[in-house]
Image (cartoon, rainbow, N blue to C red; front, side, top):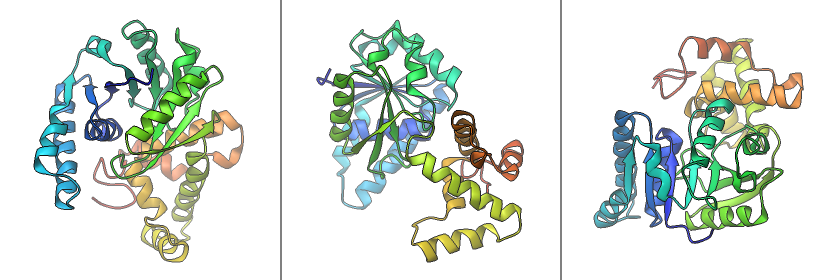
Length: 283
């Protein structure tokens, strides 16, 4: 299980292309899957730009960039993942979508292959129970932006084996990340702590306590945060924030996780943050 050479990455959006980036940069062969060729083309452009940033900072040479790009194969055919030694899915944060994907992968990849989910809040135990390999299903929650952030939350489901957990931790280290094992509870550690803060910041805006600029400035200047909670929400995606809060509220049954009505309204309006050009700030 530790002889990983080829990593399959499913989903080429913000998280998926970031995972493909760090995997190729670390010397792994990468098979990047998406349902649309246009999305894959955009992903390669993003990866190229991000590698250029590393070149500008003298962290990478031009030849090393070319080598990294050459290690990424893109495909719209899920059967192309059959040769993968380890799979990381980074599709939409939706239980049904992720479960359907894992079930499809079950019949394609070798029985020993680990299926890791980049979910930020959904139960690994529940998803694993829908597969034929629950002992080889695990959470591998990367932080955004993936090429920059060092943390990976490794989420062990009820049936996840120690072997799977160790292989995942080893892979995270090979990718240059620090793995922290956390329990399979809604939101894990990162979002269980972060999302209530973001949600409360949105309530401050809705209730007129402060403008988005004021709220972010207070947290940056007063609490020494590198980015304000509302700017961070825009970076994550307001739709993703809403989804995580809904998982927290449903899974923990505590009203303190109730999503702010303003957050719901902005998502309904398509104001999702950086990816739509407008959230609590303009981009």
